[in-house]
Length: 277
Image (cartoon, rainbow, N blue to C red; front, top):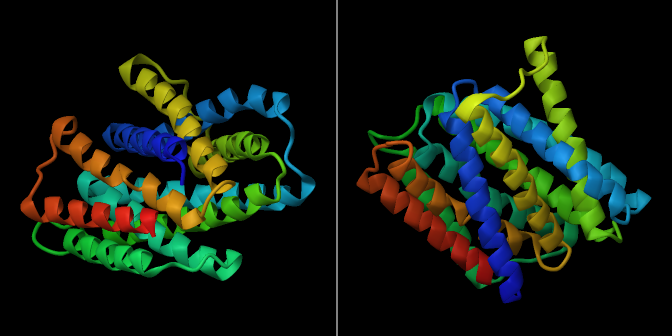
């Protein structure tokens, strides 16, 4: 994997941890995530029309990925209701590379090497550290985080397959952002029976910035999957786990226990092995 791709994916990881911190810190997390997606989808719309459109064969993947992201958002909101960012985020994001690696092996023939297998073991152990002990999230938050991880892996594998038949990686990424960006707010309307209010004040500004940067971050990941393995992209992107832990400590005033530190470092180490394997 080229240094440029790795650098862009690390930037994507930092962006992802940051917008999750915005969602976690918000008073209405479902509203936050709906506005983040709406802003991102709106920002991607001009690029979608300007760039070469993806091939027709990729559109079923694009739509399915967007639908799967609705499930991810709903479970993420549930996990953050009672769980800390530093606990929930590593469980959700740490489980994703394992599942992406499995999905890529099953559907794209990308078989993991021995370094990847070491990474899988480390990530699994790290998640166990985070899911056990006195400071672990409650059981419902853990299951919601694991469900979010399953949806993450599902939409990443779908997008990895889709972008490879799209003939235009940037066009696919832009249209994926548009479709998901509007379907997720529609799900908010279906649940709340009203449109999300317009963002205002400091929280509104943070959500708008998170929407712009979050869309850019995932577009980078989709583009990268057209160049290299899905498992490698997912693993490097999940270095956001460490960023999330630091954000939780320094910006959200979350208590960082030794167990959380060990768990986050173990998951991050596993992600490194997955990325080089």
